Image (cartoon, rainbow over all chains, first blue to last red; front, side):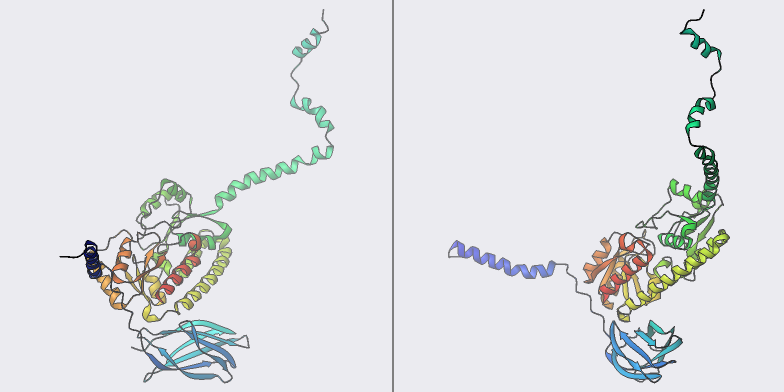
Length: 138
Length: 318
């Protein structure tokens, strides 16, 4: 091979550099990142909140975000929300309060499309604040 | 003939040595009377009474030996100042590997109640029974719980149940202080209830389909059951067992197929295998958990330990 030795050395360096990348890919032990779990798709969920004492104020949170809050003059309010509902179910943080300091119950009904309502109830005096779990019936 | 110098000497030799009262008389007579006559009698009486009551009170003080950091906290909370609790398994010590020292067994011999985790976690119960000479009640608390989990303290509900068991035991041994134990237990149960509510709220931030907890050893079954986590453990229920290659390979497949974002090391465990699995699966190390009881710093209380564990898990898996 003819040409300047400097030029030949440069070619060798370039060839080595070109080999470096596939070589590293073949030998490195970097794992394939864990697949992100198949997240459940958003579905329209019908939510009803009912209280034995009214008027009452309430807020419902899902995954740390408030999805519905308000005040109900009647004993019951309803709304449709779009949330992911995996087979394992969902947790809703329910906070409800009444002007009067007396024992009351608040019921939350969650209905999936083509499904029967799933109900959970909290009891409290003046205020309730807890997490309710809703699972699809088997 | 007596000389002027010899006379006093002969008198001294001839007469008896003066008594202490005679020697002190000139000084005593100079001290004001009220001090001399009134002060010593009540003071001496009080001192004598204290000397007599002091050891008796110490001897009657209920002494408890605890072989679980969580039970040590429960016994101290319920017993208050009526009970002396010897926490023999100290924070940060792996209870799977703990063996009582001769000094620990001496403490056991002084105790009226011995608290252990139960569920066969302690393989030295025979030594404790021998050390106590049958004088103490040996109470394996975990054996009386409704759960079968060995690491039962990783669910607040189980600790609430354990608190009632300890309260009843202390009341049985020391019925005179029953009302105090009941009040203390009631206060502690309110705090546990607040902690449980805090945990439920924190865990609710995590979708239920992401509640997959991979840890070094199988210590979080109670937590999984209480808060909706599926548990995958590299080792068995004891830290002393080594995982087989087949177990590790199966776990790697599960982590990949379930898309687990993070796996966790434990404070008292060598993280080598966990780190290897993280590298193999691409999951990150989510942090270090307290699996076997209380630790130091923020985890030196039960509430602190649970809050640390739950925050670490939820924040890493979100």
